[in-house]
Length: 268
Image (tube, rainbow, N blue to C red):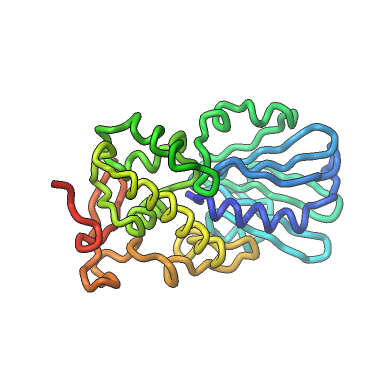
């Protein structure tokens, strides 16, 4: 599943090629927005097209000038002839075609009046993103879950939007907080470090093109290198940490969770 930095990378790539283009039967593209992992294409006629890629969704744009933009779950559809058996929708623009492909059909797209996008239940429930949230706001949201493990709570998009499994692990590592710590045991200093860790891990990912090494491709079809260059613990079970300890993997809230037991002390 693409996480926030991956969807933002897709948004930026599509914005470059779709800006000002008219969609057949609709107006011209005025902007591309993102709400958490929800991608929104706004048109100047007051309509919007929203996408959520879920587990295996992908967006592939192929221009008449041979330009190409691709993002999402990597399959042969990125380089093969489209539409294919995974194609769920085709959108004809003036200078190219946008294909929405999804093998498992978990993703979705929908046309809505632009004014209705912010009223979608998904959008209404989203918490602030790491770059927007304040210490006071995050503390209040966290303390509604005092008896829950911090890793599980960070995956809750109503608490802070955008953190998936990779970035929750990286955030907690940078904050030096064990993933099984109960929320109620966190200090103010640790909560502030969680915010900084989330921003730091996502900024690093955006700069490198997203955590695309194993699961997702960048908008130009190339692989991102976040996991090889910037990931401190995610995907590194059994490898040495920078501190000299060894990265371990456990399950928290049913998700594979990576941490360094030396840097992130176990709860007492």
